[in-house]
Image 1 (tube, one colour):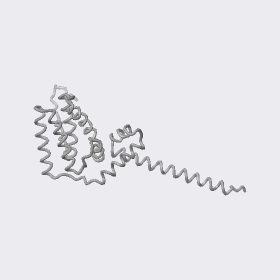
Image 2 (cartoon, one colour):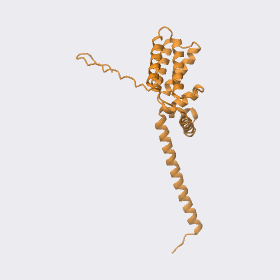
Image 3 (spheres, helix red, strand yellow):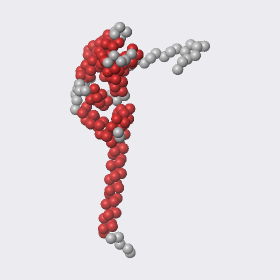
Image 4 (cartoon, one colour):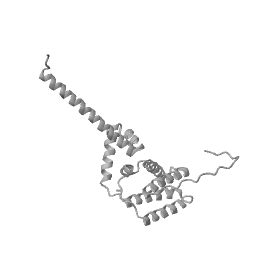
Amino acid sequence: MTTIPQNTLILAIALIVLAVGVVAWLAVQRQKSAKLRRRFGPEYDRAVKEYGGRAKAEAELSKREQRVAGLNIIPITAAEAARFSNAWNSLQGRFVDDPQGVVAEADLLVRELMVKRGYPMGDFELRAADISVDHPIVVKNYRAAQIIALRNARRESDTEELRSAVVHYRTLFDELLGVVPAKTAAVPVVPGIPVRS
């Protein structure tokens, strides 16, 4: 009977333990990545591009989660929701007469709603990062609206861009307000008239 030297046996066991440790670590990393990807959706992919890789992006997204977890984000009351909705409707009604002013007002109203909910008002990138934690799908609207608002401040945007900015702000506004957009009514099918899709 051949015996395995003790040093070889210890080395083999150490290699097996190391391999199991690496596999476990990789499994944990995959789960963490999957969790962040589910939570942040398209914001995850944007962060990977922005930070130049998955590891740096995931570190940033985890940092955002921790920062927002320390905030006191609160729902707004029905009375506040009605006040904000009325303010938005009033603002939107003035678009035809003053599209540039309405975009600036929309930005201010969204900021006011964010403050009311408990989001801190740091620079834009910090606000967008905070919003991305709980509202990852609509944060892209906030970024798009901000780009147009900056162009508007320099008088470089046209009316269609301004309209687009208001739509982007509205999407974020509704999400922060907790408003569920009304479904569009189904178009009745009339015999002999083709249905457009």
